[in-house]
Structures are given as C-alpha cells and as structure tokens.
Image (cartoon, rainbow, N blue to C red):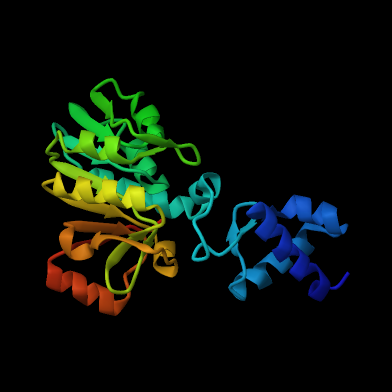
Length: 254
C-alpha cells in the first residue's frame, strides 16, 4: 500500500482515537515499524500530526490533548524547565502549584525542599509531594476533572482566596505572541486568575510547544508575572515585550 493511501487513513484513526501508535499502525497496515515512522514524520512535517513517544497525536492547536499525551510531550524539556524553576523556589515559604504536567514536573523537583506549605488544585501534585515529609500539602477541593486530576470551579477558587501565597508556579495550555496566557477550560481560567491575585510572586513554567498552540480563554498577560521558565528562547518580539514589562525569562536547555 502506498503512502498516499495510508496517510489519510492514519489521520482518520487519529481523529477517532485521539492518538496513533507506531506498533498498532504497523499491524493494521501490515508494514514495518520504520515505514509507519516515515509516514508519521511526513504527516508531522506537514502539520497534520504531532509526534510523541511511540506514535503521534492530533496537532495540539486543534483542541486540548489527553493527559498521558501531554505528559509524554517534550518530557526532557519539561524536566529541564522544572529543575531551573525549582532552583529558584526558596524553602520556608507558602507555594501554590496549579494544574498541568509542567507543574507536576516542578513538584518532583521539590521533593528535597524543606518547611514548605504547598496548596494545589492538582491531585497529581498532591500525590507527588506526599513523599516529602517536610512539606505540608493542602488540596483546594472543587469539581474533579477526571481527565487530569485537576480541581476547578467555585469551591477551588474560594479555597484559594483564604490564602496569600509567597509564590505561585503555574502552567498554561497556550502562550500567544502578544504574551497572553491561554487555556481551554473557562473554569480553570477563573481559578488561575484567583491564584495570580493571591500570590506575591508568580512563575510560569512553559515549554516551547505552547507557542505553537492556541486556546480560546485568556488567563492573563506575561506582564503580570515575575518570571518565565522555558526551554527555548522566546520570539524576539515577545522577548522585547517581556523586557519592557520587567518579566524575567529563564531558558533551561534539556
């Protein structure tokens, strides 16, 4: 079977299932793994799919992607970002960590920090930091988003309003060229905005793929943040905006 016949069907499977794997496609079409990898690479280069470990997913600008796919996407970059971010998180503070695979990576890098109060609306972050006996963990409550363990809604926001955090580390679904943080879930946006209002300082952990994505709901501007931790230099125009806003940018190489 030629690629011209395989690739449209690969796209149909990706739309139906949300992702495709090299092994399942090779079995489906009766071809080698290398043949499928070439197909996926060509589809990725054409902007039709995004490559992840073991397969591919629909382009992330189309819609939000599943938790497992997000966790696998740019994993080394997220680890480098998390390490650089955690290095600037002091001990003996109150800290908020919100929903996202990047903030979960930061939580893993905080397992050696001492005397911290961490509040989170991310069940995964709470489970990670449960392994740190020197860290008190408070979970906000709220409506459970089963897809990623996030807690959103009015109860989550009301809990956050009871605190004034020394620092918040947040993530977002997309970052546009104007410096706006974007998300897909309007309930999560409301919670994120409450976090910003209740925090003395705010860090953003975001990998380069977020600049290729789009989402409909605006959280805030980078102008409102203290520092951005990312894995590649920001576009020159956005970097100039950050300089004008006094928003520091830290580039962590994977």
